[in-house]
Image 1 (cartoon, rainbow, N blue to C red):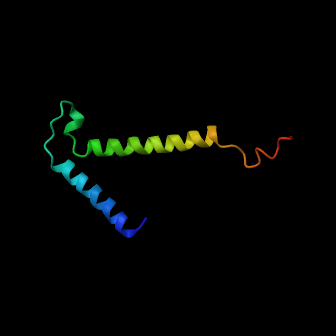
Image 2: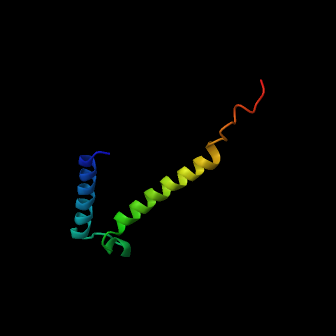
Image 3: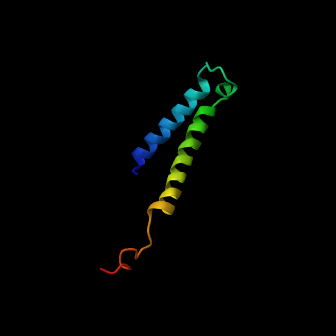
Length: 73
C-alpha cells in the first residue's frame, strides 16, 4: 500500500468517525444514541467475518502439503 492510499484511507476513516460523532441520532433504540456504536459494531462484525472465514478455510479447504503426491496412480 502506498503512502498516498494509506493517507486517503486514514482521512476517510477520520471523517466517518467525526461525522458519526457530530450527527444527530434518529434511532429508536438505545444503541443508536451511543456515539460511534454503529462504527465499532460494523468494524467488529467485519473482523469476525474475516477471521471466521480464514479459520474455516484453514480447517475445511486446505490440504496437507503433499496431499496429491501420496496417492498412487
